[in-house]
Length: 327
Image (cartoon, rainbow, N blue to C red):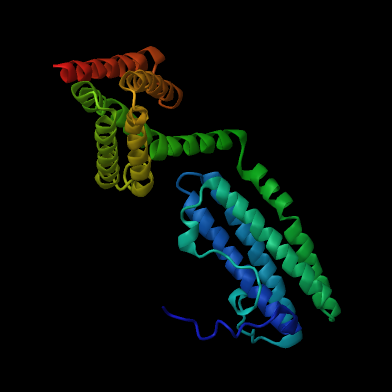
């Protein structure tokens, strides 16, 4: 384990001089501007209008930086001390780029709000302890500006996010959710619910042993989940198809496949054969109708077609399992 030799050498906020506070504010504004530009770059392919909002917010932070540099130059000269957030004990931190890459549009907006709130608190506290009139005024003005960034963001949103642009971005967000989670999850649920029907019910009617049937159902469900998860993750990295992270799709598919199989395997934990079997059959039909509903709700498949594909097909597989088990 590597230890930072300077981890215990952080300064307290109260020990900073006015020059160091200005230097800290300059570096903080530079970081926030870069973060907003990174958000803009991330959002631009799918949410171009929201990207423009963050580009404009980066310009606002850049303007604050220039005001702080001008003040520092007048009072302390051109050489700005190197002091950053991580050098000050208890100072608010920002997430590194690799932790922000996974944020959704709503999470990015929430994170931006938290950034502005923490910046407001910093400028407010810094202004309170400043003894120089010009510095105190500037820090106070910036505290008010950071507090009002919610209004600025709303104004910029009105400028860039027209009703049509919002509708387009909402559709993009919905489409991405369907491609990354719903589609692979639905495929997994269908596979887990339907493909395990025959082996589970064949085992049930062949052995009449509920515990053995449960073990067979558990192994079939987990095995199918692992297989579907790896297959979904491996066959498409999402870069060209735009279907999103292969890990997220693999997890959605694998988990839903396992759930689909376990739904009608778990009733066989009940020792009484016919009680377990009747409950399992009821669960099967609930699963099949749920799949038909999801297809209709998210994939816009006509309900009658989804019913024919899933409920009728699943019923045939169920019947095949029973027949094979009794044979």
